Amino acid sequence: MTIVSRSMITVDLEMSGLNSDKCGVWQIGAVDLKTKEFFIEEAKIDKEDMVEEGALKIIGKSEIELRDKKKQTQKELITNFFKWAKSRAKTIVGEVPQLDVEFLTKKARKYRLDYPFHHRTFDLHSVAQTKYFEIKGKFLFKDNHSELGTTGITAFCGIENILFERNHDALEDAKLVAECFTRLIRGRKFLPEYSSYKIPRYLLK
Image (cartoon, helix red, strand yellow):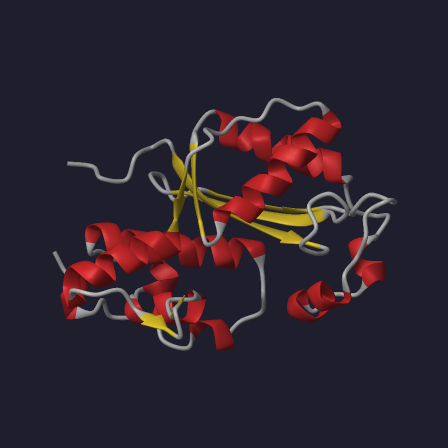
């Protein structure tokens, strides 16, 4: 039985900040959970888009790089991504997918593009906490907050310290979500770049 549907993709956006009304999208990465095909493209943000200093520190880019005139427009980036996704995906899987969806829906309205995804999404955090409860009989909380952030989820899936070994990148983040999601749901490895990381015994089917 195929648990992961053809209509699911993992998605990650890199933005110039967290304000979906004022900030822009400069990179999109996605992975098809059935075929393992991926999408990765970059663009220059729009002239009116705001750049937050905190975002630059996280992504390791300068504002000049985000406004590089040699790159395609943000509208072209969103259009290309929707075109890639339209024939394969209806449901988004992500780490805090609501933020990515918020940006995509607002950019779709801005550029008058048809939004190709269903409004329901799979949140990797919720899936991980559910699996943790299934195994441990409790949720992982500290000071009334979830302890399963991205680092905690990857460690729970047997992928230790991966976030400290690479640069921040939309495709790499989408691939990591795809790997963790597959390990949590199917108890199997998914992508070759993570083959050296053993699946914890408690996740094996």
